[in-house]
Amino acid sequence: MTDAPKGPVGLLGTTTGRSGIAGWASALLIATLPLQSMAEDFKPNVFFGFDMILTPIALKGACGGDVSGDVAQINALISAFPDDAQNAGIADHLQVLTTTAWQQKDPALVIGGGLTDDHLNLLCKRAIALDLTWLSPQTIGRDNPMSPSRQAAWQQFWTALEYR
Image 1 (tube, one colour):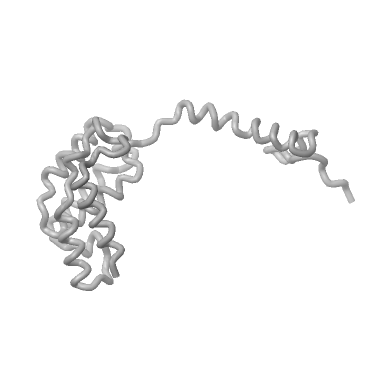
Image 2: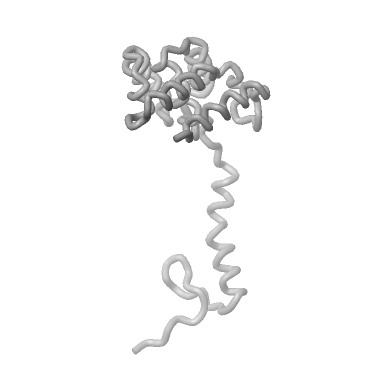
C-alpha cells in the first residue's frame, strides 16, 4: 500500500510539494494564470443571450404583428457584427422565422403547445406591443438602453409568459 500524496494535487495529478493553505493558494494561482490571460483577450459575442430578444419578436410576428422595424434593427446588428452574427447563427434563425412562423401566423410554432387560448391571446397581445427600436449597434451591450415605457412592455411580456 502506498502513502497518500502529501499536499494538494496539481492539474496533472502530481503533488505540488506544499501542504496546507499555502499549497492550495499556489495551486489556485497557477491554475488561474491561463484564465487571466484569456480574460484579457476575451470579447463576448454581442448576440449572447439574443434568444431572450428574438423569441418574443418571433412570437410578435407569428401573432400578426408588424416586425419590419424589428427585422431592420436585427439586420443592422448583423451588418455591424458579422462575425458574431455568423457564430451565433442569427441570420439562420431569422430566415427560419420569416419562412415558417411569420408566414403561417402560427404562434405555436414559436412558443410550443399546451397553452390555453386565453394565455396565447395574452402572450400575443403583449408580444405585439414589443419593438426593437431601442436596439442598435451603438446601444447593444449597454446596461439599459430602453425607455421606461419599453421596459414596462418587455416586463409585461415576461410576466404574461409566466402566467398560468
